[in-house]
Image 1 (cartoon, rainbow, N blue to C red):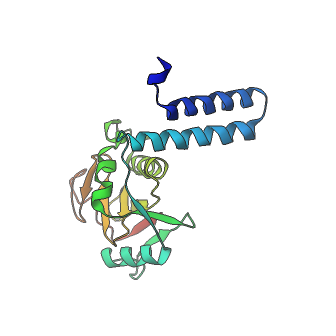
Image 2: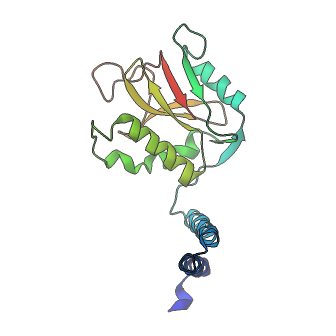
Length: 197
């Protein structure tokens, strides 16, 4: 029976057992290290088996991101009430192109969650999807847009080929500036706002 279990899975289970043992011996640092290795190995195994979306990424610079956003967004850092970007990372890994991210966009589990205006609304959906993208797919170029001009929050994806897409995590759809998926007026104006990357 054990010979049917892939050796990668046995190694992962062994790491997790070692992490649990270290935790109960009060060796938190060792436990965390083993847990992180097990999690990374499991993710790699699932990708190799084709079970997990695996968008190809490429390192890009902040200047590249600034240039791509400036090309796409009219009010980017130049108007009286501009759209600004806050960079939260030192290094950025962007999906190579739209096709590499297509499967990952479809893997959005958050579209099935209920909208709760009091505590889980548009900005929470957008932040959750950006976190999922960084954690599962290794891209931190899925940003959160706080669109003050539309009173809405959603995601923006910057690709290594210079393309920029708007993404609505509540509907799991790529949207265009001026679209009205969620409300009756345009939910994607981006005449004034903040992009968090």
